[in-house]
Amino acid sequence: MITTADQQHSPAGPHKLPKRSAAQQRTCAVSRQAHDPEDLIRFAAAPDGTIVPDLHRKLPGRGVWLQAKSEVVEKAIKKNVFARSLKEPVKPGPGLAQLVERLLFDDARQSLAMAKKAGALVVGAFQVEKLLARGSVAAVIQASDGSQDGIRKIDQALFRQFGAGADQVARVKIFDSSQLGLALGQTNVIHAALRQGAATQAFLSRVRRLAQYRENRTEPQTAKVRHSDDTRGAEIEDK
Image (tube, rainbow, N blue to C red; front, top):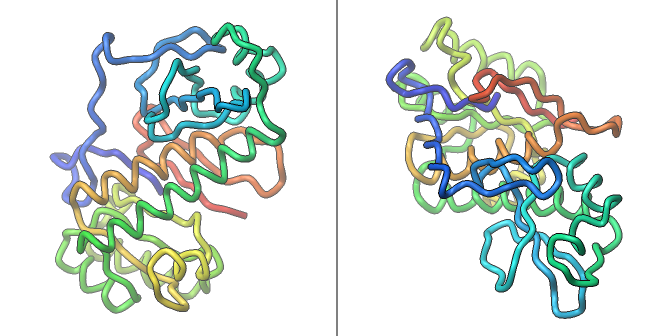
């Protein structure tokens, strides 16, 4: 689950992401609606005239902002939005929408590695349960190919500690064990958990954006996502 529940209402839930002022918001080139930059993806023109995703908003020149949803990117491609917005004969490369998803996934995985370097992460079922017992956990990460028995034990530990408030703890299941191992420099990683902190918030923000991008996709392997406006109770899980 991905949640941005206010920590004041739950000892386990991270703070809500702050809303930007109207001056800080950007307009989606497809919907023409203003959004927080965190809910958008910036695209820029490369020297060869192709359009490239600029996830960290660092590339020079004018940019095209699109809501972080795969169907919006596909619509922008079909309607030639990039060339019209930049007033240049730019062209999106093949598979642009799929490239964005891969980059968002890699961004989330790299952010998890940064959380480990920041000392915000514990690995292994025993360490996860110890952190849960202290009540200081902000997110639980479970490998998508982990055993159901192991997942059930962590869920039981969550419920023992937080009761009905267990749903306020973010649960992330977008990585398999090999992907977790690659991100964390270990092998056979099935269970991990994150403490409260800036590195954890950065990771959850990236996972939330990936979940938003994958929402309503039509491919059979898409992530399942359900969420309210603040993503409380949202679950993202690769199938």
